[in-house]
Image (tube, rainbow, N blue to C red; front, top):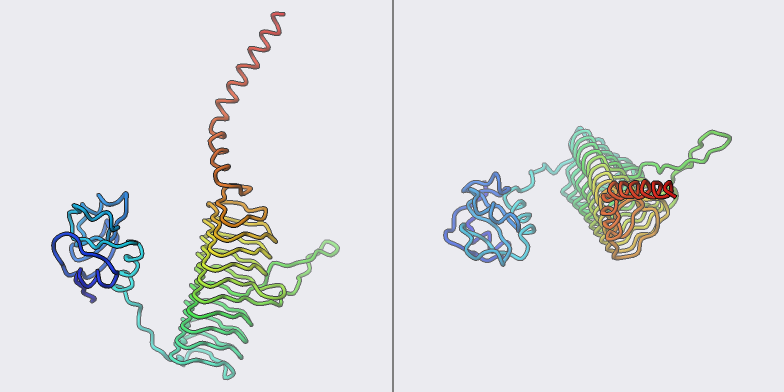
Length: 342
């Protein structure tokens, strides 16, 4: 069990102690479940809720410490400090660093130092598994796949032949990297498959959620840049190029040959047409349908996706449509009566 004083915690997160008391802290959790032995965090408008909670201490923004009735640690970014506390009080499970006898590893594969390959995992010929990487049961690393250092593959991950992963890549259960792109040509009414001979390249610190799919290029590579985070049930199609530090939230679907810039956020169920270019620093609201190129620094919403301010105006007008239709009907009736009197 991890035990820390508030003074120790403040030092770890670069915070300032506030209030009275320095209780021992044994855990970290949310406001509702926190006990006297645990620390939580709060930002407006939840400060009052945190003040009334049972938490032994609270991590707060620097400007919220005055008169707070509990021991507190004041920091610039409470959410980041909370994440650091979760890491501190919930260290990762220890994994035995070995190639388990029930794993299937080709003699032609290269296995780095301090690697864990668990029962039922398969590493095919020519694959490279970097130092410190962990392969959980029933993962498949295909021929000539290259894994960087400290990669983490959870159960039932599949990486097709020839794909490349950078350092510290995390693939959650069921992720499929390098499956065929959806390419067909219709000849005399029958669909004939176009061979998909490319690969996928994932940059350093990419994370792919459960049951998400990144298709290989038809030729060349599908690329996801450094630091990009992909949620569960996301589809990235063939030959897409996704920039660095992007967020792709659940159910996002990106059609083939789309170029997405750096620091782009696509909220849940956003979808695109193919062969588009999306600039840096864009944000797309949930269920946006992107049908045209989008310039950098844009905030879009709706279907078809449009500037967020325009979309908001349209939503306001739509709510007024029933009243407008009623008024038009009344005016038409008055005009008809007037015409009949002539």
